[in-house]
Length: 101
Length: 169
Image (cartoon, rainbow over all chains, first blue to last red; front, side, top):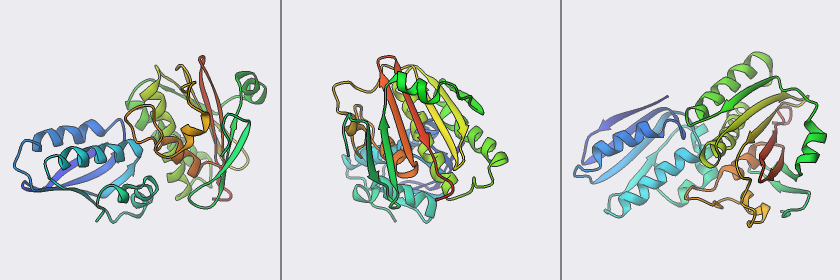
């Protein structure tokens, strides 16, 4: 299961993710993104500290948001202090694509 | 690494080597045809990506004393990549679990059309290679965390054998 909490409202959005982000749970995050995408946004941060699982599909979803919002000049970044999650972020090479806090 | 030849090896992120062996269906039957899985799960749709991970974890927690982090988390991640491929690219399949002396072995079998016949086999194991819009990291992740991968693919479907090694980490 995935929980997405809006830890900080627009324009500086922080979304705190808890649980597991994979192909089966990605739609939960997508629903939240649909709620905020039409708002006036300055930047978006995904906090991954509460995740206990993410795979390449979940990471691909985050990179997808990064690319979509880049077209609107809205930076999207990842904030993570979770070592297990960091290992897979590094393996996939997320740092090369988007900022990791 | 090698292409469509029999065996190739590649260094993983932790310095261990993953061996990739490509075989045909007859060879698969000769190697594994008589073995019985300890447990089997169907792969039918998106929800099975999470469900099979949880069920495998619960099953192995109760039976394998070496089933502990960080190896446990890494194997579950790599296994999820394989199950996700079945859901993304095929009509469905099944995951079978076997227990070897050094750790669990997973057979991920699908009813798809096989890996793209026009692409050299080695490309599927390269980071960033994808026939769709995905990241193309699935096989790459599997290679990082499994000791050996046996691949058998044709228009009759794909059988992926993922061998772990809990004893050497």
